Image (cartoon, rainbow, N blue to C red; front, side, top):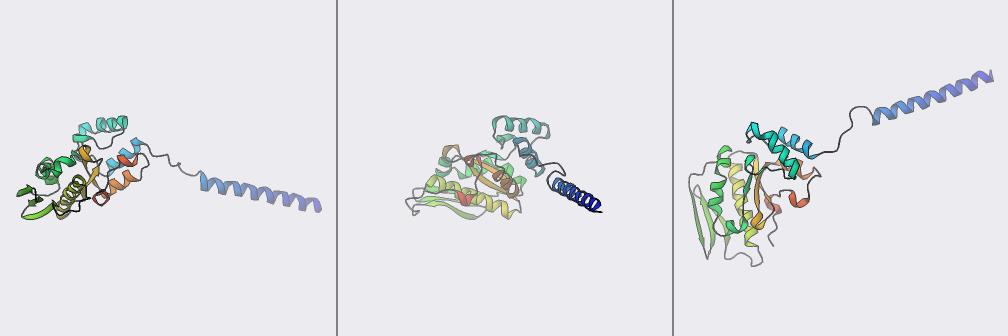
Length: 215
């Protein structure tokens, strides 16, 4: 009788070990493991979000391959999301010219620029768009303010205001700064995906206008 009890105990113990093993396997190995995100997978995710909606369909594969090769996501003129926004030019009366540069993108979003006038003088810099006046800066701005950065921020705020008014989910973000500054158009979802991808150095991630450093 004792022999049968011992055998039963051993079988129960073995059964418990097998059950524990299967349970552990179910929670750790069932399904396909998540692969680390790569530049290729990031671009594919961005494509699903509409990142290449303004790119010639015949060029998308080549544009993505180039982005992987050089590590620059935004594609210059090919994606129609990437524009020069030289901060010095903006600060020295170049906002109207910048708006003309991005006009095709704005029109695609439903933005109409019926009239654009600017007043650039020693007293400051204002621009009137569709009858509404926007201050780029004045001679009363704090002396510690970086006029280049301030001009960029307020120009981009103006653009984002126009996009929001038109009901677009696109916004303009700043990449780099100074004479190398670029305006990158993204949706919030695209920007968040890029920001959290872990693939780009902080200086390679476009920033919102409220993150532009003014000093």
